[in-house]
Image (cartoon, rainbow over all chains, first blue to last red):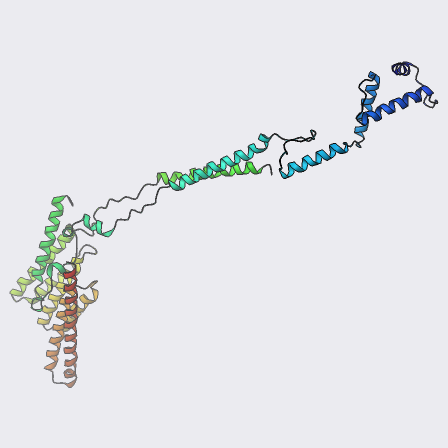
Length: 199
Length: 194
């Protein structure tokens, strides 16, 4: 067989319309059988370098024609693996179809892990801010403490408690009452000045 | 779909930045001051003491005029009290003026000027902001003025004047009753809340 190949390759190139010789027909038939065996997965372990080169060219031409199909067994195995991976079943990671490319597990989950961690940190920050937010305290000075800061005797106020009920026979005795009022307010005024109020 | 994690991360960062921005004002917010300085209008000050002092002197001046029988001069002194200026909102101002009006009303009644006396007294009652023993005193003087009117009308000979006597007496009773009501009310308040 090697000798025939050498003969054809080394011999003169026949005319395009020349009738194929018996040797050529035999060689063509032998090569066709070799190609069929190769496509069927039964490629011979040993062949000449020229035959191997031709077989590889034939394989490439066939693949380029787009009509290459996986064997039925391998096709079924690939479909089963794809279905198991889609439903997340056991054994989804292990596939018999090595041709199906898969991203590494870490590459698929890394963005989600980063996003989840960021969300957790943000939620924790919000919770901390809410829990440690300063309470709004209204510093409203109630009336009672404010009055307590200034003694009653220092304050301007009605004179009813000081004067009391005015009897009818003393209705015109305003001079006595103004004396009483003035003396009381003067006491408060002096006390306030002495204790540290008005300079 | 592949941009969803990135969007979540960006949203989380935005939330953090927003929280940090919101926290700044809260940290710098200063509490409202609690220190209270006495309100000049509340405490006894020089203006109030000056007004009270002038009212006191005018009352004593009127008293001297009255003792001398110079009622017109006494009336003028008391009228001067009504024109005194007091610190705004000082309760003593209303008390002193009402007391001066009561005295003025009595002096005018003594002079026979009943209508002027009634005007002075009723002005004081109408301008008062609260019930006080001084308002009750003004009502007492108002009742006395009504009494004086009734007595004056009783001496008249015409029928119309005689018919008004009853009205004046009823008005006097009404004024005395109102005066007593205020006295009782205030006395009760002072007893419960001295």
